[in-house]
Image 1 (cartoon, rainbow, N blue to C red):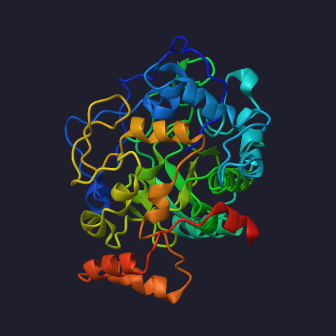
Image 2 (cartoon, helix red, strand yellow):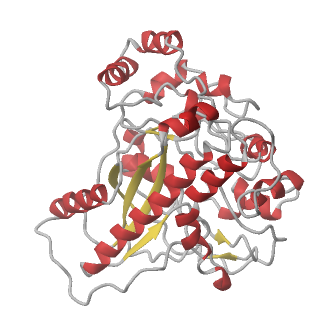
Length: 408
């Protein structure tokens, strides 16, 4: 989740949401989703994610983080003399972000960074007449068809759940906190899975690999806006959201799009962890999907590829547990938790985002090929240790030299 903005001191906080309002919870699917949520659960404020903290928290913000952000906006003249960190590597990475950036920066004068701190607003109003569907199931089927036609790798539908909505959003520029501006009557969430380029990600660590992330965001932005406008053209309210407004991974799991992995990311059956996520909140009645498991939790319990591969040991080696001390962690949930400060610190040190954990994950495979599908079946069965052995034996997850990528 790369961020791009001018570093500013934190400003005042705005009005927080009315905590007396009832909290809508979708607890019925917690068990099938594998969620372990305790009575000490606390909602999460966006200002505490490590990327927001890099704008106001002196324990995260430093010269390295400023230099990291500068590589996305300053002329590329002097960079590291290393394969994968040349001017053309940065040029491709930043070009991949361009479409996403156009929408993110369009309303800076209104103290909005849409897609990161705020939901998107660049939509036409809903039509005055509504198109009726025979059933919510028929509506869901059509929405999924449209989303895939617009480029989504997969799509699922979940109930809105206030536990995963930010308790408040925060402006990167002014530091002001505000309520999340998505009306509660938009009670269905369409979750979009956007795959990232596997070959580009194989070059990580490199600035070149960041092009996969950037294009994932740009393509996700286009798909989210197009599907949202389609829903509005049908006469329904719909709001597109990327990294803003709510935690995407819990909603994606509830929407049946994958499972939570040791590396702290969604692992999907079609693309492994090599995905970006987007959300559309709508009042269109839709049949919701159920969580589905395919053996990720059991496989991750015996696999340490991501924790062994992480250069700064940010990925936990042990079993799921309560979060560590610190503001950037969700309270009251038992899960694998990545050390956010170590992870982002390595990003800043490398002068680009990192995805080594994704590259080395055994689920990072091309599942259009039958050997990969066979491996996935093994990994989801009692033969998972054989799948893990085969993964190591075949040398899965090796880095592709950026110069080899450029050579074609």
